[in-house]
Amino acid sequence: MGGNMTIEEAIKTAIEFEIKIRDIYSEAADAVDDEVGKRIFKTLSDDEQHHVDYLNSKLEQLQETGTITVERLDSAIPSQKIIKQQADQVKSLAVKDFHGIKQQMLSKALKAEIETSEFYQRMANELSAEGQAMFKRFLEIENNHIDAVQFELDYLGKTGYWFDFKEFDME
Image (cartoon, rainbow, N blue to C red):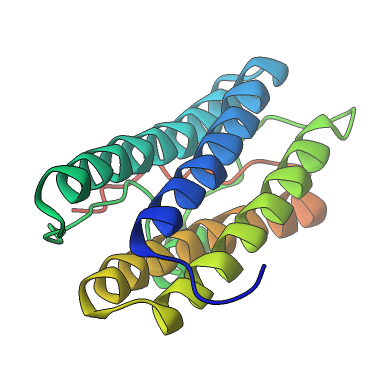
C-alpha cells in the first residue's frame, strides 16, 4: 500500500484486525474443554470486543465531527510483570493438555496479535497526534496480549498446565 493511511482508514483496518483476533479467541474458547482455558480465551475475546466497540465509536465520532478524542482504554489483561510475579506464587492448575489444541490455538492467536501490533506500531508512527495517541494505547494493550499469550504457551509447554490470570485482580 502506498502512502500514509488516513485516520479513518486506520480505524477501519484496526477494526478488521480486532474482529479477526476476537473470533480466534472465541473459537478457541469453544474448542477447549476445560474451565480455565475457556475463561482465559473468553477474557481475551471480551477484551478484543471492547476494542471493536471503542474503535467503532471513534469511527462514528470521526465521521460526525471530523476529529477524535481519545478516552482511556482499559484492558482486562494484566501486564507481563504482574503475570510473572503471580506465576511464581500460583500452583499449577490441574488441567493437562493432551491434544495440543491449546498450543495450536494460542499459536494462532499469537500470530494474529503480532500482525495487529505491527500495524498499530506503524499507525503510531504515521498518524497525526490524536491518531498516534489512540494507537499507542492499542499498541500497549496488544503487546500485553502478546506477552500473556506467549506466557501461556511457555507455561503450557513447560508444565502442561494453564496459567490462570483470573486468580488475581488487576485493578
